[in-house]
Image (spheres, one colour):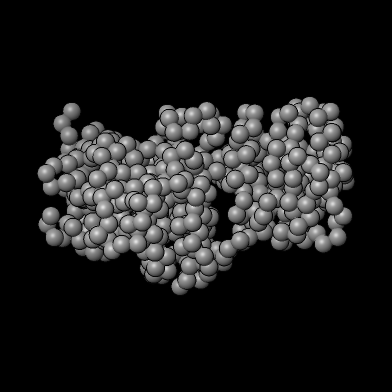
Length: 486
C-alpha cells in the first residue's frame, strides 16, 4: 500500500497535557500543526483524561516551597563527580559526557520552576480554571492546586483551543518510527485508519511512558510487571513507541528505568485511580498474615509511593489494610479511599482473616502483637505525624499507632498501580531530545511522561505541571524551527 504524505510544520505525537500544550503553543506561534493520537476521539488524552491533575503550586504565580530542591535532591545513585561537576558551568563549557549523563539537570528544573506559573496563566487564558481542590491526602507535606474538573477539563479545554487555532487531529493513528535525513528528524511514519502515512514536520514526542506495554514492563521491571497495571484506562494506550523511536536514533535517557510511579489501589476496582490512602490509620498484612512495612513513616502524600513498593514486594504483589472502628472514625478518612468496591467486613479479626483467605492464626497473632506494642492514645492527631509509635516490634509503626480492637473490622486489598514509568528520554531545558553524545537531536523535541526526571521517589504533583510547561516550550521551539526554514 502506498504511503500517504501529510506536510505540516510541526507534528505532535500524543494528546495528553504535554501534547495539547505543544500543539496549542506551536499553532499560536504560526505553525501548521498535526496531532497524532492512538486512541479514538472519545478516549483521547491518555493519563491526563483520568487524573485529578494536582499541581505542586503555592498559587498560580508561585511554585510550592522547596519545589526545586525536592527534584534535584532525589537520590540518583552515586554519579561520577568528575562528570556531574559540570552542572555548575555555563552550558557552553559543559562537556558532552555531562550533557548526556543520566542525572537530573538543575537547569531543566530551574526552567520548570520559572515557567510553571506563566504556563498555568497561559492555560487559564485558554479557559482552564485552577483552584485549591480537595485532595485524597489526610496529611500533606506540600501545597497543591488543580484544574477545576481535573485532567478531563485540560483535555477538553486545551483540545478546543487547539482546534480553534487550526490544529488537525488524527485519531486512531499510531506513530511507529521517525523519519530523518541529513537535516535531522523530518517527521514520523504512522499507521492510520486509511493505511500507512508519513507526517512531515518537526516532531514533538508527547506519547507518555510504556506502562501499557507488558513486554517493555517485563524488560525493565522483571517479575514486578506481573503485579501491577496502569492506574487508569488511559495508561493502556501508552505503549512506548515514542521511547523506542528515539532510542533507535541514538537518544540519551534520563530517569530510573528500574522504577515507576507506584500508587496504592484496590485491585478489585476498574475505576481510574481507585486509590487506598488510609493505611496509616490501620495495619498492613501480607498473604502470610504478617506486617512487613511501617505504615506511617510520615505524611501520606510523601510516603505512599515507598509503602506501595513494599506492598508490591510481597507474595503476589498484594496486601490488605485492616481497620477497626477507631480507624474508620478518623475524620474524613473516606476522602483517601477512592475505590467503588466496599471493604470486606467481619465482627472478629479471625473471621476477617478467613474471609480474606489469609491464615487465621497468623493474622490474629499479628494484630495481638501490634496491639500490645501500641502506646497510650494521648496526643493522637490524625492530621499530622503525632509520634505515637510502637515499641518492641521488628517492624515499627512510627505514627498514629492505636490498637486494632474495636469491631466490626474492615479490610481493603491493595496492589501497586503504575501511574507512569520513571525512565524516559533526556531533554534539554528547551525540550530538545539529546543524543548519547550530548547533542540536541535536530528537529526532535519531547515533553511529559515520555521524558525522564525521577529516580528514587516521585516528587508529588509535578508530572502534569512539567508536561504542560515543557509541552508549551517544545511547541514554541518546534514552530520557531519551522519558521526559520531549517
